[in-house]
Image (cartoon, rainbow, N blue to C red; front, side):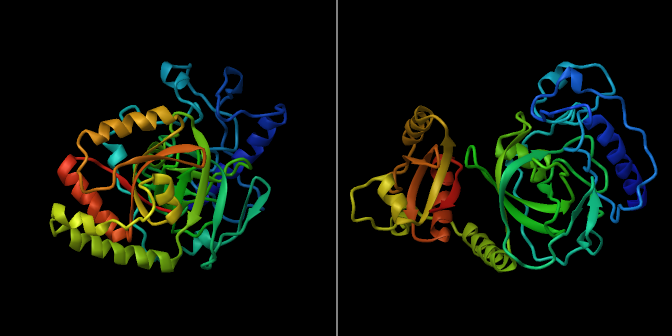
Length: 349
């Protein structure tokens, strides 16, 4: 689909969306209703003030849900996405094991870097290396746009780790945190959207799945841009990790990895001291974290710090540590995976 054709299609949606919204006082994007259904939108010629073609998901958060067929059981379980969008009928297995996007330093695309106007609002994309941190409600987009061109010109794949944002550089990389459960992912921004005042970012299906809000349709997120200096450090760390992965970790090496703590063995004391930790989960209920801890202890290596439950930001997190550096925490995670077949993530305090 050419940029001009996309521009005409989505600019036409502006006129239709305005008509539809005029009869509504509020739009609940998290709970699709029978009364929210509308007939399919007719394509019209673009208004003259649209300066740049919007992304493939321009209508994801801009109009009430559209349904071209009667309600199905899949629609009723859909959560917060639109009735004409959502997950595919056949979801590939193992999506939770999809690796995060691997940050690289890339030149910005010229077209998506120009200011553009949509839904009577002008957006000015970022084209420098300024820091960027944003908190708000994030959503996701799926099969309706799967296989269509994004604002970058790339084909949207709902099973990759990508995102759409109104102003972040294309391409760029961001770390997205689900503030309701502490889960984090890194995604590559290659599309424009969402164009709704209450949404700050649209993630791919897989990214939203890994963050744990696919069924809800949206969640409170934190979006942090990865700047070139941090990307360089991450690339250097990956090279180190690759070399360490080729070298088996002996069990007697782990003792030297753990930071000495003079205070009594307490995860709360350890967290206050800072450092790197192995995290096995974040829970809203303390009992769930305690249950997982008991299961882990049944196969826990004696020379690793025992997992402890730590309350942080309203969640109960299961941590082991601290470790002096991320490299040492990585090696401890490898040893834990080898000896007890346990997967973990690394967090810094």
